[in-house]
Length: 187
Image 1 (cartoon, rainbow, N blue to C red):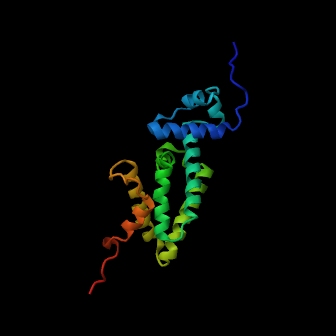
Image 2: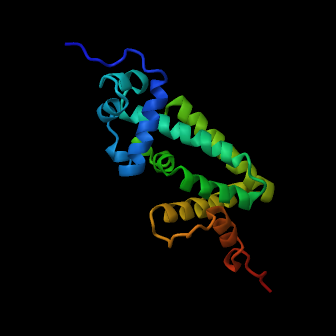
Image 3: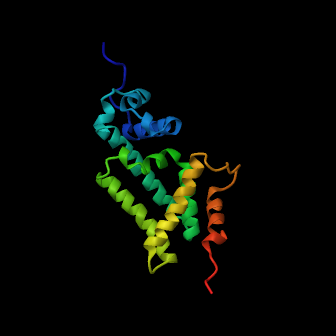
């Protein structure tokens, strides 16, 4: 007996990415299975492989999607503190993307779309840093990214008290004004 499943799904690629994001949000990226995603969206178990090849290909598409969303968010930044705040906000608004984007062992690292998306994100971050520290933006960039990524990760993993309705971007900006980051000049 033939399956009652329709031959055409519509935007199957997007449906599979959305289903993967739901699984990642609920159970983490290690729970993603192409067969289970096919079942969720109502297609044959072979259909996801047509679009992504394998699990790493699907997770790479999730990461590329995440980097593009992050670039859109970073493009709205008005200054370096806002850039970092938007980075933290992105992580908390898109936790499933964030979990995958920075796990290279899950991804096809050399996929051109991923390489391009990472480069575009890095360019946005470096541009924000260079505006503040034009002489040597690399070290400043590492410091800013470490602070933003670390704060985002601590918040996502529950290792900091909840914000209780607080704005994560504002928390980042507040942390940046801490005296530790503005030492007095040596005499």
